[in-house]
Length: 114
Ligand code: HEC
Image (cartoon, rainbow, N blue to C red; front, side, top):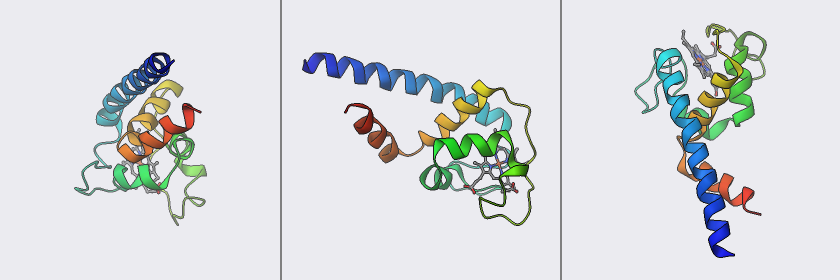
């Protein structure tokens, strides 16, 4: 039984890692010019902060269509362009952003193993 649970969570971890890896490439090509991941600054917020303060769903919504979400995210104006990304790319980059916080990853695993 323990072995089964361990293999399942390992599989889960591997598949999360794969999405986050693809998402990192999406990030580098489409977001890195405005969003840092090591608090070095930029036009948009650092994704480390974003990963703590936003859900994966919120990140996906914002990446897909910033112009219709900026008010509910607390901004007075929208400077982020709507990027030509596919649904998969948006999900992968949201996984990558969420993966920046080890604590969040640990919580996700706890929830899914119930
Ligand atoms: C041209 C610069 C630029 C690019 C490229 C860009 N962003 Fe942004 N982003 C911004 C700015 C500026 C904001 C602040 C709100 C606004 O102006 O829309 C923002 C806000 C956000 C937010 C909300 C942050 C929060 O917690 O309040 C998310 C999520 C986000 N961006 C994700 C992305 C993702 C994912 C990509 C790449 C696929 C990306 N951005 C590419 C400039 C950019």
